[in-house]
Figure 1 (cartoon, rainbow, N blue to C red):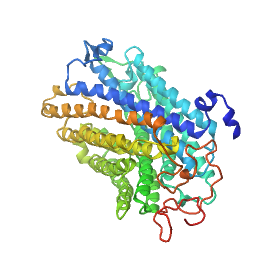
Figure 2 (cartoon, rainbow, N blue to C red):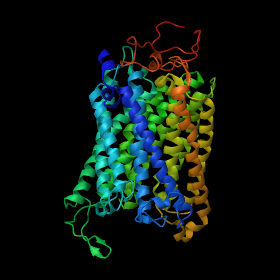
Figure 3 (cartoon, one colour):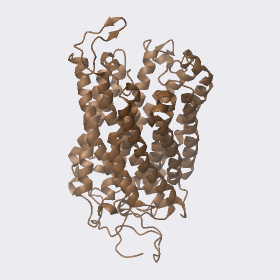
Figure 4 (cartoon, rainbow, N blue to C red):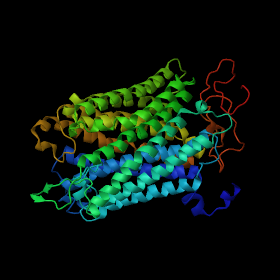
Length: 573
Protein backbone atom coordinates (compact mmCIF):
# COMPACT_ATOMS: atom_id res chain seq x y z
CA UNK A 1 0.00 0.00 0.00
CA UNK A 2 2.88 2.39 0.58
CA UNK A 3 3.55 2.50 -3.17
CA UNK A 4 0.38 4.55 -3.64
CA UNK A 5 2.11 7.61 -2.17
CA UNK A 6 4.83 7.53 -4.84
CA UNK A 7 2.50 7.37 -7.82
CA UNK A 8 2.47 10.22 -10.36
CA UNK A 9 -0.40 12.73 -10.23
CA UNK A 10 -2.38 11.16 -13.07
CA UNK A 11 -2.27 7.73 -11.42
CA UNK A 12 -3.06 9.04 -7.95
CA UNK A 13 -5.89 11.44 -8.76
CA UNK A 14 -7.06 10.82 -12.37
CA UNK A 15 -6.81 7.08 -13.03
CA UNK A 16 -6.78 6.20 -9.34
CA UNK A 17 -7.69 2.80 -7.94
CA UNK A 18 -8.28 4.17 -4.41
CA UNK A 19 -12.02 3.87 -3.66
CA UNK A 20 -12.02 7.25 -1.91
CA UNK A 21 -10.63 9.13 -4.91
CA UNK A 22 -13.04 7.28 -7.21
CA UNK A 23 -15.92 8.14 -4.86
CA UNK A 24 -14.95 11.82 -5.02
CA UNK A 25 -14.70 11.60 -8.83
CA UNK A 26 -18.20 10.13 -9.00
CA UNK A 27 -19.57 12.71 -6.56
CA UNK A 28 -18.09 15.79 -8.27
CA UNK A 29 -19.06 14.56 -11.75
CA UNK A 30 -22.58 13.70 -10.54
CA UNK A 31 -23.02 17.14 -8.93
CA UNK A 32 -21.91 18.86 -12.15
CA UNK A 33 -24.37 16.81 -14.19
CA UNK A 34 -27.13 17.65 -11.67
CA UNK A 35 -26.35 21.33 -12.14
CA UNK A 36 -26.42 20.97 -15.94
CA UNK A 37 -29.67 18.97 -15.89
CA UNK A 38 -31.21 21.59 -13.60
CA UNK A 39 -30.20 24.32 -16.08
CA UNK A 40 -32.02 22.47 -18.89
CA UNK A 41 -35.15 22.37 -16.73
CA UNK A 42 -34.95 26.11 -16.01
CA UNK A 43 -35.00 26.80 -19.76
CA UNK A 44 -38.04 24.53 -20.16
CA UNK A 45 -39.83 26.39 -17.39
CA UNK A 46 -39.55 29.68 -19.33
CA UNK A 47 -41.37 28.16 -22.30
CA UNK A 48 -44.08 26.74 -20.01
CA UNK A 49 -44.57 29.99 -18.07
CA UNK A 50 -44.38 32.35 -21.06
CA UNK A 51 -45.05 30.26 -24.20
CA UNK A 52 -44.01 31.87 -27.44
CA UNK A 53 -41.93 34.62 -25.81
CA UNK A 54 -38.16 34.93 -26.48
CA UNK A 55 -35.91 33.45 -23.82
CA UNK A 56 -34.11 36.45 -22.21
CA UNK A 57 -30.31 36.83 -22.07
CA UNK A 58 -29.38 33.46 -23.60
CA UNK A 59 -32.07 32.78 -26.23
CA UNK A 60 -30.06 34.48 -29.00
CA UNK A 61 -27.05 32.23 -28.31
CA UNK A 62 -28.80 29.18 -29.76
CA UNK A 63 -29.11 28.23 -33.42
CA UNK A 64 -32.25 28.94 -35.41
CA UNK A 65 -33.03 25.20 -35.33
CA UNK A 66 -33.38 25.40 -31.54
CA UNK A 67 -34.56 28.96 -30.88
CA UNK A 68 -36.21 30.87 -33.73
CA UNK A 69 -35.60 34.49 -32.86
CA UNK A 70 -35.00 33.45 -29.28
CA UNK A 71 -38.33 31.56 -29.09
CA UNK A 72 -38.00 27.89 -28.16
CA UNK A 73 -39.09 25.47 -30.89
CA UNK A 74 -41.04 22.28 -30.04
CA UNK A 75 -38.19 20.03 -31.20
CA UNK A 76 -35.71 21.74 -28.87
CA UNK A 77 -38.20 21.61 -25.99
CA UNK A 78 -38.45 17.83 -26.51
CA UNK A 79 -34.64 17.59 -26.46
CA UNK A 80 -34.49 19.48 -23.16
CA UNK A 81 -37.17 17.25 -21.65
CA UNK A 82 -35.55 13.99 -22.75
CA UNK A 83 -32.07 15.01 -21.67
CA UNK A 84 -33.18 16.59 -18.39
CA UNK A 85 -34.70 13.30 -17.24
CA UNK A 86 -31.80 11.20 -18.51
CA UNK A 87 -29.10 13.42 -17.01
CA UNK A 88 -30.73 13.90 -13.61
CA UNK A 89 -31.45 10.19 -13.08
CA UNK A 90 -28.67 8.28 -14.87
CA UNK A 91 -25.86 10.86 -14.78
CA UNK A 92 -26.66 12.74 -11.57
CA UNK A 93 -28.55 11.10 -8.71
CA UNK A 94 -27.50 7.45 -9.21
CA UNK A 95 -23.76 8.21 -9.67
CA UNK A 96 -23.80 10.53 -6.64
CA UNK A 97 -25.83 8.20 -4.38
CA UNK A 98 -24.18 4.90 -5.35
CA UNK A 99 -20.91 5.78 -7.08
CA UNK A 100 -20.08 8.70 -4.79
CA UNK A 101 -21.40 7.91 -1.31
CA UNK A 102 -21.28 4.13 -1.83
CA UNK A 103 -17.73 4.01 -3.15
CA UNK A 104 -16.34 6.29 -0.47
CA UNK A 105 -18.13 5.03 2.64
CA UNK A 106 -19.05 1.36 2.17
CA UNK A 107 -15.41 0.14 2.54
CA UNK A 108 -14.95 2.49 5.50
CA UNK A 109 -18.14 1.35 7.21
CA UNK A 110 -17.25 -2.35 6.86
CA UNK A 111 -13.61 -1.88 7.92
CA UNK A 112 -12.14 -2.78 4.50
CA UNK A 113 -8.93 -1.25 3.11
CA UNK A 114 -10.49 -0.80 -0.36
CA UNK A 115 -13.07 -2.26 -2.73
CA UNK A 116 -12.66 -5.91 -3.71
CA UNK A 117 -11.72 -5.04 -7.31
CA UNK A 118 -9.97 -1.64 -7.33
CA UNK A 119 -9.13 -1.62 -11.06
CA UNK A 120 -12.69 -2.62 -11.95
CA UNK A 121 -13.79 0.29 -9.79
CA UNK A 122 -11.66 2.69 -11.83
CA UNK A 123 -13.01 1.27 -15.11
CA UNK A 124 -16.56 1.67 -13.80
CA UNK A 125 -16.05 5.41 -13.28
CA UNK A 126 -14.43 6.04 -16.65
CA UNK A 127 -17.08 4.09 -18.57
CA UNK A 128 -19.68 6.25 -16.78
CA UNK A 129 -17.71 9.39 -17.69
CA UNK A 130 -17.53 8.36 -21.36
CA UNK A 131 -21.28 7.72 -21.36
CA UNK A 132 -21.86 11.21 -19.97
CA UNK A 133 -19.62 12.79 -22.62
CA UNK A 134 -21.55 10.96 -25.36
CA UNK A 135 -24.81 12.33 -23.93
CA UNK A 136 -23.49 15.91 -23.92
CA UNK A 137 -22.00 15.59 -27.43
CA UNK A 138 -25.44 14.60 -28.73
CA UNK A 139 -26.55 18.24 -28.34
CA UNK A 140 -24.10 19.26 -31.07
CA UNK A 141 -25.01 16.79 -33.83
CA UNK A 142 -27.37 17.84 -36.66
CA UNK A 143 -30.98 18.08 -35.42
CA UNK A 144 -29.75 17.94 -31.82
CA UNK A 145 -30.05 15.49 -28.94
CA UNK A 146 -32.60 12.75 -28.25
CA UNK A 147 -36.20 13.93 -28.60
CA UNK A 148 -38.15 10.83 -27.54
CA UNK A 149 -38.30 11.42 -23.80
CA UNK A 150 -36.09 9.82 -21.16
CA UNK A 151 -38.06 6.60 -21.79
CA UNK A 152 -37.08 6.44 -25.51
CA UNK A 153 -40.37 4.82 -26.52
CA UNK A 154 -40.52 3.00 -29.85
CA UNK A 155 -41.51 3.51 -32.62
CA UNK A 156 -40.85 7.27 -32.21
CA UNK A 157 -37.31 6.64 -30.92
CA UNK A 158 -36.48 4.37 -33.87
CA UNK A 159 -37.26 6.99 -36.51
CA UNK A 160 -35.86 9.95 -34.50
CA UNK A 161 -32.72 11.86 -35.65
CA UNK A 162 -29.07 10.99 -34.93
CA UNK A 163 -29.13 12.26 -31.34
CA UNK A 164 -31.21 9.22 -30.39
CA UNK A 165 -28.39 6.90 -31.54
CA UNK A 166 -25.94 8.72 -29.28
CA UNK A 167 -28.46 8.51 -26.43
CA UNK A 168 -28.57 4.72 -26.82
CA UNK A 169 -24.76 4.46 -27.00
CA UNK A 170 -24.47 6.62 -23.88
CA UNK A 171 -27.01 4.44 -22.06
CA UNK A 172 -25.06 1.29 -22.95
CA UNK A 173 -21.97 2.86 -21.35
CA UNK A 174 -23.88 3.97 -18.23
CA UNK A 175 -25.46 0.54 -17.79
CA UNK A 176 -22.10 -1.20 -18.22
CA UNK A 177 -20.63 1.10 -15.57
CA UNK A 178 -23.45 0.24 -13.14
CA UNK A 179 -23.01 -3.50 -13.73
CA UNK A 180 -19.27 -3.31 -13.00
CA UNK A 181 -19.90 -1.25 -9.87
CA UNK A 182 -22.66 -3.50 -8.53
CA UNK A 183 -20.50 -6.63 -8.87
CA UNK A 184 -17.79 -4.81 -6.94
CA UNK A 185 -20.13 -3.67 -4.14
CA UNK A 186 -21.66 -7.10 -3.61
CA UNK A 187 -18.27 -8.84 -3.49
CA UNK A 188 -16.81 -6.18 -1.18
CA UNK A 189 -19.67 -6.33 1.35
CA UNK A 190 -19.75 -10.14 1.40
CA UNK A 191 -16.00 -10.78 1.49
CA UNK A 192 -14.20 -7.81 3.08
CA UNK A 193 -16.10 -7.13 6.30
CA UNK A 194 -13.96 -6.61 9.38
CA UNK A 195 -13.70 -9.30 12.08
CA UNK A 196 -16.83 -9.32 14.19
CA UNK A 197 -18.93 -7.44 11.62
CA UNK A 198 -21.79 -9.86 11.06
CA UNK A 199 -24.57 -8.94 8.65
CA UNK A 200 -26.83 -7.71 11.45
CA UNK A 201 -24.08 -5.44 12.71
CA UNK A 202 -23.86 -3.65 9.36
CA UNK A 203 -24.95 0.00 9.30
CA UNK A 204 -28.27 0.43 7.50
CA UNK A 205 -26.48 2.52 4.86
CA UNK A 206 -24.44 -0.56 3.88
CA UNK A 207 -27.61 -2.69 3.72
CA UNK A 208 -29.20 -0.10 1.45
CA UNK A 209 -26.18 -0.09 -0.87
CA UNK A 210 -26.08 -3.91 -0.82
CA UNK A 211 -29.71 -4.27 -1.96
CA UNK A 212 -29.26 -1.43 -4.47
CA UNK A 213 -26.33 -3.31 -6.02
CA UNK A 214 -28.52 -6.38 -6.57
CA UNK A 215 -31.16 -4.18 -8.22
CA UNK A 216 -28.55 -2.75 -10.58
CA UNK A 217 -27.09 -6.15 -11.33
CA UNK A 218 -30.41 -7.83 -12.12
CA UNK A 219 -32.51 -5.01 -13.61
CA UNK A 220 -30.05 -3.22 -15.90
CA UNK A 221 -29.19 -6.11 -18.30
CA UNK A 222 -32.71 -6.21 -19.84
CA UNK A 223 -32.47 -2.50 -20.66
CA UNK A 224 -28.94 -2.90 -22.05
CA UNK A 225 -30.22 -5.69 -24.30
CA UNK A 226 -33.20 -3.52 -25.28
CA UNK A 227 -30.86 -0.61 -26.07
CA UNK A 228 -28.78 -2.80 -28.38
CA UNK A 229 -31.96 -4.07 -30.09
CA UNK A 230 -33.22 -0.49 -30.57
CA UNK A 231 -29.82 0.45 -32.01
CA UNK A 232 -30.19 -2.42 -34.49
CA UNK A 233 -33.68 -1.20 -35.40
CA UNK A 234 -32.18 2.23 -36.10
CA UNK A 235 -28.96 1.19 -37.84
CA UNK A 236 -29.33 -2.36 -39.16
CA UNK A 237 -32.89 -2.42 -40.48
CA UNK A 238 -34.26 -4.89 -37.94
CA UNK A 239 -37.79 -4.70 -36.53
CA UNK A 240 -37.69 -5.73 -32.90
CA UNK A 241 -39.91 -2.79 -31.92
CA UNK A 242 -41.27 -1.65 -35.29
CA UNK A 243 -44.78 -2.85 -36.26
CA UNK A 244 -45.90 -3.55 -39.82
CA UNK A 245 -47.76 -0.86 -41.77
CA UNK A 246 -46.56 2.10 -39.67
CA UNK A 247 -47.56 5.39 -41.33
CA UNK A 248 -45.57 8.57 -40.59
CA UNK A 249 -46.55 11.90 -42.20
CA UNK A 250 -48.75 10.07 -44.69
CA UNK A 251 -46.03 7.64 -45.81
CA UNK A 252 -45.63 3.96 -44.93
CA UNK A 253 -42.34 3.37 -43.10
CA UNK A 254 -40.25 0.84 -45.00
CA UNK A 255 -39.35 -1.74 -42.36
CA UNK A 256 -39.61 -5.51 -42.27
CA UNK A 257 -42.27 -5.13 -39.55
CA UNK A 258 -43.58 -7.66 -37.11
CA UNK A 259 -42.08 -5.94 -34.08
CA UNK A 260 -43.93 -4.81 -30.96
CA UNK A 261 -43.49 -1.29 -29.48
CA UNK A 262 -44.98 -2.49 -26.17
CA UNK A 263 -42.07 -4.94 -25.83
CA UNK A 264 -39.76 -1.93 -25.42
CA UNK A 265 -41.96 -0.63 -22.62
CA UNK A 266 -41.76 -3.95 -20.78
CA UNK A 267 -37.97 -4.09 -21.09
CA UNK A 268 -37.57 -0.42 -20.15
CA UNK A 269 -39.85 -0.46 -17.10
CA UNK A 270 -38.43 -3.76 -15.87
CA UNK A 271 -35.34 -1.64 -15.19
CA UNK A 272 -36.96 1.71 -14.55
CA UNK A 273 -39.13 0.70 -11.64
CA UNK A 274 -36.31 -0.96 -9.66
CA UNK A 275 -34.42 2.20 -10.68
CA UNK A 276 -36.78 4.21 -8.46
CA UNK A 277 -35.52 2.19 -5.49
CA UNK A 278 -31.92 2.58 -6.71
CA UNK A 279 -32.57 6.29 -6.18
CA UNK A 280 -34.36 6.10 -2.84
CA UNK A 281 -32.65 3.26 -0.92
CA UNK A 282 -29.21 4.95 -0.61
CA UNK A 283 -31.08 8.09 0.49
CA UNK A 284 -32.86 6.11 3.21
CA UNK A 285 -29.49 4.72 4.29
CA UNK A 286 -27.99 8.20 4.59
CA UNK A 287 -30.98 9.50 6.53
CA UNK A 288 -30.83 6.53 8.92
CA UNK A 289 -27.16 7.22 9.76
CA UNK A 290 -27.84 10.90 10.42
CA UNK A 291 -30.99 10.38 12.50
CA UNK A 292 -29.30 7.77 14.73
CA UNK A 293 -26.32 10.08 15.28
CA UNK A 294 -28.39 13.20 15.99
CA UNK A 295 -31.09 11.67 18.19
CA UNK A 296 -28.39 10.01 20.33
CA UNK A 297 -30.40 6.79 20.54
CA UNK A 298 -30.50 3.47 18.66
CA UNK A 299 -32.59 3.30 15.50
CA UNK A 300 -36.06 1.95 16.21
CA UNK A 301 -36.69 -1.45 14.61
CA UNK A 302 -33.30 -1.93 12.94
CA UNK A 303 -33.95 -5.57 12.00
CA UNK A 304 -37.42 -4.75 10.70
CA UNK A 305 -35.87 -2.08 8.48
CA UNK A 306 -33.31 -4.57 7.15
CA UNK A 307 -36.00 -7.14 6.33
CA UNK A 308 -38.07 -4.38 4.73
CA UNK A 309 -35.26 -3.21 2.46
CA UNK A 310 -34.64 -6.81 1.33
CA UNK A 311 -38.38 -7.24 0.65
CA UNK A 312 -38.42 -3.98 -1.33
CA UNK A 313 -35.57 -5.30 -3.46
CA UNK A 314 -37.50 -8.49 -4.23
CA UNK A 315 -40.89 -6.86 -4.85
CA UNK A 316 -39.48 -4.10 -7.06
CA UNK A 317 -39.09 -6.65 -9.86
CA UNK A 318 -42.80 -7.51 -10.04
CA UNK A 319 -44.46 -4.10 -10.15
CA UNK A 320 -43.08 -2.62 -13.39
CA UNK A 321 -46.27 -2.84 -15.47
CA UNK A 322 -48.15 -0.36 -13.28
CA UNK A 323 -46.56 2.14 -15.69
CA UNK A 324 -48.41 0.37 -18.51
CA UNK A 325 -52.05 0.09 -17.40
CA UNK A 326 -53.15 1.96 -20.54
CA UNK A 327 -51.44 -0.42 -22.99
CA UNK A 328 -54.38 -2.82 -22.90
CA UNK A 329 -52.67 -5.67 -21.06
CA UNK A 330 -55.99 -7.02 -19.76
CA UNK A 331 -57.80 -6.79 -16.44
CA UNK A 332 -56.19 -9.87 -14.86
CA UNK A 333 -52.64 -8.65 -15.46
CA UNK A 334 -53.61 -5.13 -14.43
CA UNK A 335 -55.09 -6.49 -11.19
CA UNK A 336 -51.89 -8.45 -10.47
CA UNK A 337 -49.65 -5.39 -10.86
CA UNK A 338 -52.10 -3.25 -8.93
CA UNK A 339 -51.90 -5.67 -5.99
CA UNK A 340 -48.10 -5.94 -6.04
CA UNK A 341 -47.88 -2.13 -6.17
CA UNK A 342 -49.98 -1.85 -3.02
CA UNK A 343 -47.86 -4.54 -1.33
CA UNK A 344 -44.53 -2.84 -2.07
CA UNK A 345 -45.74 0.29 -0.29
CA UNK A 346 -45.84 -1.62 3.00
CA UNK A 347 -42.06 -2.07 3.58
CA UNK A 348 -41.50 1.56 2.55
CA UNK A 349 -43.99 2.61 5.23
CA UNK A 350 -42.22 0.33 7.75
CA UNK A 351 -38.88 2.06 7.09
CA UNK A 352 -40.41 5.55 7.16
CA UNK A 353 -42.32 4.77 10.37
CA UNK A 354 -39.19 3.38 12.04
CA UNK A 355 -37.27 6.55 11.20
CA UNK A 356 -40.08 8.75 12.54
CA UNK A 357 -40.33 6.66 15.74
CA UNK A 358 -36.56 6.96 16.15
CA UNK A 359 -37.11 10.67 16.76
CA UNK A 360 -39.42 9.94 19.72
CA UNK A 361 -37.65 10.56 23.02
CA UNK A 362 -34.39 11.46 21.35
CA UNK A 363 -32.05 14.21 22.51
CA UNK A 364 -32.21 15.75 19.04
CA UNK A 365 -29.38 17.93 17.75
CA UNK A 366 -30.69 20.09 14.91
CA UNK A 367 -27.46 20.21 12.95
CA UNK A 368 -27.56 21.08 9.25
CA UNK A 369 -27.42 17.39 8.21
CA UNK A 370 -30.29 16.66 10.64
CA UNK A 371 -32.43 19.44 9.12
CA UNK A 372 -32.08 17.88 5.68
CA UNK A 373 -32.61 14.35 7.05
CA UNK A 374 -35.81 15.17 8.96
CA UNK A 375 -37.17 17.12 5.97
CA UNK A 376 -36.69 13.97 3.87
CA UNK A 377 -39.30 12.12 5.96
CA UNK A 378 -42.45 14.13 5.08
CA UNK A 379 -41.23 14.74 1.52
CA UNK A 380 -40.79 11.03 0.85
CA UNK A 381 -44.13 10.46 2.61
CA UNK A 382 -45.86 12.81 0.16
CA UNK A 383 -44.09 11.16 -2.77
CA UNK A 384 -45.16 7.70 -1.64
CA UNK A 385 -48.77 8.55 -0.79
CA UNK A 386 -49.35 10.35 -4.10
CA UNK A 387 -48.07 7.27 -5.91
CA UNK A 388 -50.89 5.07 -4.63
CA UNK A 389 -53.58 6.53 -6.96
CA UNK A 390 -51.21 5.89 -9.88
CA UNK A 391 -50.94 2.24 -8.82
CA UNK A 392 -54.73 1.78 -8.94
CA UNK A 393 -56.03 1.01 -12.41
CA UNK A 394 -59.20 3.12 -12.15
CA UNK A 395 -57.60 6.37 -10.96
CA UNK A 396 -54.57 5.91 -13.24
CA UNK A 397 -56.84 6.24 -16.30
CA UNK A 398 -57.38 9.90 -15.42
CA UNK A 399 -53.95 10.66 -13.93
CA UNK A 400 -51.71 8.81 -16.41
CA UNK A 401 -49.28 11.09 -18.28
CA UNK A 402 -50.47 14.22 -16.48
CA UNK A 403 -48.52 16.64 -14.30
CA UNK A 404 -49.69 14.61 -11.31
CA UNK A 405 -47.15 11.95 -12.33
CA UNK A 406 -44.43 14.60 -12.58
CA UNK A 407 -45.27 15.87 -9.10
CA UNK A 408 -45.34 12.36 -7.59
CA UNK A 409 -42.04 11.23 -9.08
CA UNK A 410 -40.23 14.45 -8.27
CA UNK A 411 -41.39 14.42 -4.65
CA UNK A 412 -39.62 11.08 -4.33
CA UNK A 413 -36.49 12.21 -6.18
CA UNK A 414 -36.09 15.96 -5.59
CA UNK A 415 -37.47 16.98 -2.15
CA UNK A 416 -36.88 13.37 -1.16
CA UNK A 417 -33.64 11.90 -2.49
CA UNK A 418 -31.81 15.17 -3.16
CA UNK A 419 -32.45 16.46 0.37
CA UNK A 420 -30.99 13.20 1.69
CA UNK A 421 -27.95 13.54 -0.57
CA UNK A 422 -27.36 17.08 0.66
CA UNK A 423 -27.69 15.76 4.22
CA UNK A 424 -24.98 13.19 3.43
CA UNK A 425 -22.66 15.84 1.99
CA UNK A 426 -22.93 18.03 5.11
CA UNK A 427 -22.64 15.00 7.43
CA UNK A 428 -19.58 13.34 5.87
CA UNK A 429 -17.77 16.44 4.61
CA UNK A 430 -15.60 16.51 7.80
CA UNK A 431 -14.60 12.88 7.22
CA UNK A 432 -13.60 13.48 3.60
CA UNK A 433 -11.81 16.81 4.09
CA UNK A 434 -11.05 17.15 7.81
CA UNK A 435 -13.03 20.40 7.81
CA UNK A 436 -16.61 21.33 8.64
CA UNK A 437 -19.01 23.25 6.41
CA UNK A 438 -20.53 26.54 7.60
CA UNK A 439 -23.72 26.05 9.65
CA UNK A 440 -24.99 29.52 8.73
CA UNK A 441 -24.73 29.01 4.96
CA UNK A 442 -26.00 25.45 5.38
CA UNK A 443 -29.19 26.60 7.11
CA UNK A 444 -29.80 29.27 4.44
CA UNK A 445 -29.37 26.57 1.80
CA UNK A 446 -31.74 24.22 3.61
CA UNK A 447 -34.64 26.57 4.24
CA UNK A 448 -34.60 28.14 0.78
CA UNK A 449 -34.32 24.75 -0.94
CA UNK A 450 -37.02 23.14 1.22
CA UNK A 451 -39.57 25.90 0.68
CA UNK A 452 -38.87 26.40 -3.03
CA UNK A 453 -38.89 22.67 -3.86
CA UNK A 454 -42.40 22.49 -2.45
CA UNK A 455 -43.29 25.60 -4.43
CA UNK A 456 -42.15 23.86 -7.60
CA UNK A 457 -43.79 20.46 -7.18
CA UNK A 458 -46.91 20.84 -5.01
CA UNK A 459 -48.88 22.85 -7.64
CA UNK A 460 -48.23 20.09 -10.18
CA UNK A 461 -50.74 17.87 -8.35
CA UNK A 462 -53.42 20.51 -8.97
CA UNK A 463 -52.48 20.71 -12.66
CA UNK A 464 -52.56 16.92 -12.95
CA UNK A 465 -55.97 16.62 -11.29
CA UNK A 466 -57.17 19.24 -13.80
CA UNK A 467 -56.06 16.88 -16.59
CA UNK A 468 -53.07 18.88 -17.88
CA UNK A 469 -50.82 16.53 -19.86
CA UNK A 470 -47.08 16.35 -19.33
CA UNK A 471 -44.65 17.03 -22.21
CA UNK A 472 -46.71 19.97 -23.51
CA UNK A 473 -44.61 22.53 -25.37
CA UNK A 474 -47.39 25.12 -25.21
CA UNK A 475 -50.01 24.37 -22.52
CA UNK A 476 -52.12 27.32 -23.68
CA UNK A 477 -53.15 25.34 -26.78
CA UNK A 478 -55.52 23.26 -24.61
CA UNK A 479 -58.67 24.84 -23.18
CA UNK A 480 -58.65 22.76 -19.99
CA UNK A 481 -55.00 23.74 -19.29
CA UNK A 482 -55.55 27.50 -19.59
CA UNK A 483 -57.10 28.02 -16.12
CA UNK A 484 -54.01 26.47 -14.51
CA UNK A 485 -51.53 28.64 -16.44
CA UNK A 486 -50.90 30.97 -13.45
CA UNK A 487 -49.56 27.90 -11.63
CA UNK A 488 -46.99 27.43 -14.41
CA UNK A 489 -45.76 30.97 -13.84
CA UNK A 490 -45.56 30.38 -10.06
CA UNK A 491 -43.75 27.02 -10.55
CA UNK A 492 -41.23 28.58 -12.92
CA UNK A 493 -40.44 31.49 -10.59
CA UNK A 494 -39.90 29.01 -7.74
CA UNK A 495 -37.65 26.90 -10.00
CA UNK A 496 -35.46 29.85 -10.94
CA UNK A 497 -35.21 30.94 -7.31
CA UNK A 498 -34.34 27.34 -6.40
CA UNK A 499 -31.39 27.61 -8.79
CA UNK A 500 -30.24 30.76 -6.98
CA UNK A 501 -30.72 28.98 -3.64
CA UNK A 502 -27.93 26.59 -4.55
CA UNK A 503 -25.38 29.43 -4.56
CA UNK A 504 -24.94 29.31 -0.72
CA UNK A 505 -24.22 25.57 -1.01
CA UNK A 506 -21.66 26.06 -3.78
CA UNK A 507 -19.94 28.89 -1.86
CA UNK A 508 -20.04 26.85 1.35
CA UNK A 509 -18.59 23.78 -0.34
CA UNK A 510 -15.57 25.47 -1.88
CA UNK A 511 -14.98 27.95 0.97
CA UNK A 512 -15.00 25.13 3.53
CA UNK A 513 -12.47 23.09 1.53
CA UNK A 514 -9.85 25.74 2.29
CA UNK A 515 -11.05 27.78 5.27
CA UNK A 516 -13.57 25.52 6.99
CA UNK A 517 -13.14 24.81 10.68
CA UNK A 518 -10.78 21.87 11.23
CA UNK A 519 -12.29 18.89 13.03
CA UNK A 520 -11.07 15.73 14.73
CA UNK A 521 -11.77 12.28 13.29
CA UNK A 522 -15.19 12.01 14.98
CA UNK A 523 -16.76 15.49 15.23
CA UNK A 524 -20.35 14.17 15.43
CA UNK A 525 -19.46 11.58 18.12
CA UNK A 526 -20.82 8.78 15.94
CA UNK A 527 -20.45 5.03 16.40
CA UNK A 528 -19.91 3.47 12.95
CA UNK A 529 -16.48 2.39 11.73
CA UNK A 530 -15.73 5.23 9.31
CA UNK A 531 -15.43 7.62 12.26
CA UNK A 532 -12.61 5.56 13.76
CA UNK A 533 -10.44 6.32 10.71
CA UNK A 534 -8.39 9.54 10.40
CA UNK A 535 -9.97 12.53 8.62
CA UNK A 536 -9.32 12.41 5.70
CA UNK A 537 -8.59 8.66 5.69
CA UNK A 538 -5.18 7.59 4.34
CA UNK A 539 -4.67 5.00 1.62
CA UNK A 540 -5.70 1.76 3.28
CA UNK A 541 -8.24 3.70 5.41
CA UNK A 542 -7.30 2.62 8.95
CA UNK A 543 -4.13 3.02 11.02
CA UNK A 544 -4.94 -0.34 12.66
CA UNK A 545 -7.12 -3.13 11.31
CA UNK A 546 -10.49 -2.61 13.04
CA UNK A 547 -12.36 -5.31 14.98
CA UNK A 548 -16.11 -4.92 15.58
CA UNK A 549 -17.62 -5.71 18.99
CA UNK A 550 -21.24 -4.50 18.73
CA UNK A 551 -24.02 -3.18 16.52
CA UNK A 552 -23.88 0.09 14.59
CA UNK A 553 -26.08 2.36 16.73
CA UNK A 554 -25.07 2.00 20.38
CA UNK A 555 -26.09 5.42 21.68
CA UNK A 556 -27.07 6.43 25.22
CA UNK A 557 -26.39 2.98 26.66
CA UNK A 558 -27.10 2.83 30.45
CA UNK A 559 -23.90 2.62 32.50
CA UNK A 560 -21.69 4.21 29.83
CA UNK A 561 -19.88 7.44 30.67
CA UNK A 562 -20.35 8.82 27.15
CA UNK A 563 -23.56 8.68 25.11
CA UNK A 564 -21.94 6.83 22.22
CA UNK A 565 -20.13 3.47 22.10
CA UNK A 566 -18.15 3.01 18.85
CA UNK A 567 -18.30 -0.33 17.10
CA UNK A 568 -14.53 -0.76 17.24
CA UNK A 569 -14.10 0.13 20.93
CA UNK A 570 -13.58 -3.04 22.97
CA UNK A 571 -14.15 -1.71 26.47
CA UNK A 572 -16.80 0.65 27.79
CA UNK A 573 -16.19 4.38 27.89
